[in-house]
Length: 132
Image 1 (cartoon, helix red, strand yellow):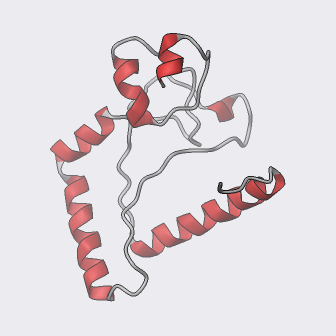
Image 2 (cartoon, rainbow, N blue to C red):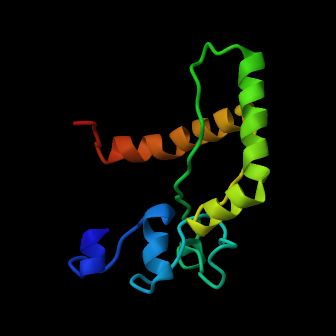
């Protein structure tokens, strides 16, 4: 982010929370969003998929718990997190940082993570990316 702002690099994929302060103060310009759909918090900004059909890559944040957490505790945590995300102050704060709250169930999150692994796993293998 520092190199982008300083002009050492001309373009970057940036996470919304790290970029939004600089977008708001005019130091960065958003060219496109990498998510599948346009973002309500960036009206008028196209998606990359509008130029490169099928492109979709987005940052996502989630709460996770140990796999052996009792279901009643998991359900209670999920219900409380969903309530928090429905709070207008919390929700508007997240949106102002470039995030879009999308509450879901633990089952939906599991399916989403599996789909992301299926999507990016082959890319990682083809590119021979490894953890150092």
